[in-house]
Length: 92
Image 1 (cartoon, rainbow, N blue to C red):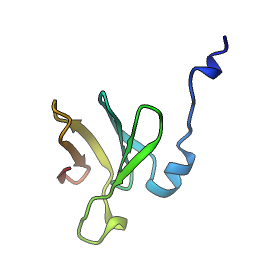
Image 2: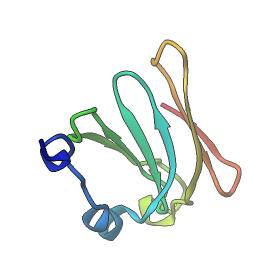
Image 3: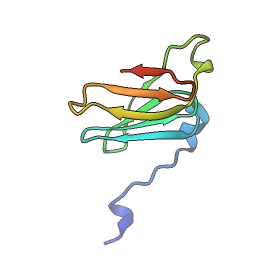
Image 4: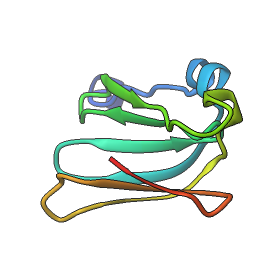
C-alpha cells in the first residue's frame, strides 16, 4: 500500500499569496489553526478543508495587520487567543 493514498499533502503557496506565510500553529481535536504573516488565522478541519478565516479588525484595516506570533485554544475549545508581533491580543 502506498503512503500517497493515506495522506494528502497540501502546499501553502496559494495561502501565502493571499494571507502571508504560516507563522504559528495550534492543533486541537476538532481543528487546526494556522496564524499567518498578515495577521489572519486560518481554521482547517482534520480533513484539510479550510473552514473559516479570521481577520483581526485593527486600526488601518486588514492590510495593516501585524503577523501572528502565538496561538492557544482553551481546553473547552470555545476560545482561541491570538498574539500578534506588536503585543496585541485577539480573543475569538
